[in-house]
Length: 176
Image 1 (spheres, one colour):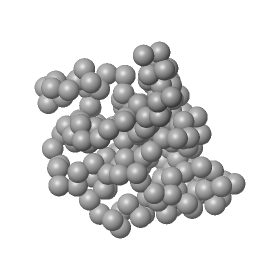
Image 2 (cartoon, one colour):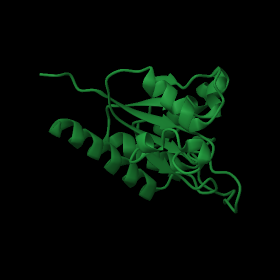
Image 3 (spheres, one colour):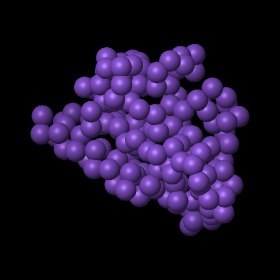
């Protein structure tokens, strides 16, 4: 029997867990002190439905160990106030900290250097499919991207889409 492959979630921070711009409410509830609870709840919903998922930080926050620790501390703080809700205690990996080109290319490079990936999604507010800079790998990113609105961040509907995409990829692997 073949060993199941990895499930990877590429996580951006700004515009996904941390909305910016627009008319975002400054009174949003935040147990974590960093991210609005509603974005963490949406992220947590994905992790609950796909508990074997590993998180690869693809955000520019990845360049600073201090920033990475702030994210993980925010997850711990949220979990403490929400009956130990499941959130990652560490990142599986980060995309190359020396490569700051196009996000799509950064993720593609990571995937190309990795093995045994069964399913993956990218949660990002940046465009990863459309546009001239994304033409090169566009077809590889179809059905793998959940694009958030920067000023809103990750929503329950985005989480539902992410779950459906991951489950469809797992189902496809089983059928092959």
